[in-house]
Image (cartoon, rainbow, N blue to C red; front, side):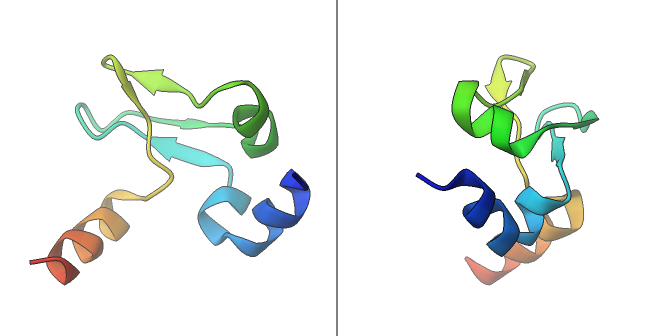
Length: 63
C-alpha cells in the first residue's frame, strides 16, 4: 500500500494530529508510521484523526 498517497488525500491524516475521545488529550503523530506500526492509544482506546469539531459534525450528521 502506498501510505504517502493515502495520507496526501486525507486531510485528517495529513495534519498529523490525533485526539482521545475519552479525555480530550491530543498529540502529534507521524501518520505513515502509525499506519505501519499501530495507531496511538490513550485511556485504553485508539485515538481518532477527527478533531473535536469534526466529531460533533459527524455525530450530528448521523442522527
